[in-house]
Image (cartoon, rainbow, N blue to C red):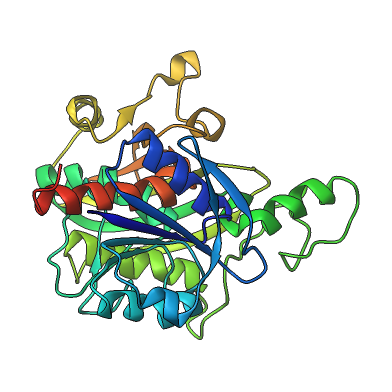
Length: 329
């Protein structure tokens, strides 16, 4: 009898998790939905049943669950994930709390799989996820020397508050989620600034890319930018390969790889767009061109729905992977 819990079930990502569990036909016998005290008691319709969302407490987390999908803040995960784990659950956590712990698996199913050192599995940063998916076939075929990211991240990455800042900014209202208006503006600032001048979001992409690809010495840098787009992140990757390659060879590689969708016909204005990625599971790649300023280096444009592949979908795909590895159908 499989008992599944979703923590943060009333949030943007939590609701997407529920939709994805339904769409992916994830098997379970019992489902429990948890939230903060503020949202406890909310009624949620799911698969023909009405669920009352429960407040997450130590006592509730101490009950036995087989699998827990955690979509709450880092502090909540830090406290409750080990309690779920101790009670026998496999916790798949969407926060940044556990990603860089040596004993915690950081997983993108198209790239790697968990080793189950602990009962907690970390879901990576949204922009990292959509980036390492195309980087993996490049690494397998040509090897990687260096990756330079520039991200263009949608406001839904900040949850409901980010969306509200964008919508209310058009009305002239002051921002609440961001330090400056996001409407009609671009913010080169996501998360807090670190002593090295990078933001925490940028450092996440650097560290997580190395860990997921198991390339601890890979040269990686990043600039992360918030843009006035509601959903779907875009990432510009400048990638230096180890073995010689051509644009055509990279296009052919992506064309044949079912982990990505190639959209690369600039003569007809066809390239990945955030608006076309929204609501889609896939990672889209295109605008592939040679960087003439560096040897064997190529620009690649990547888009993906940050609430799906960047969060809820990847979490559920990890659950599918875990079920498969454990022989559960």
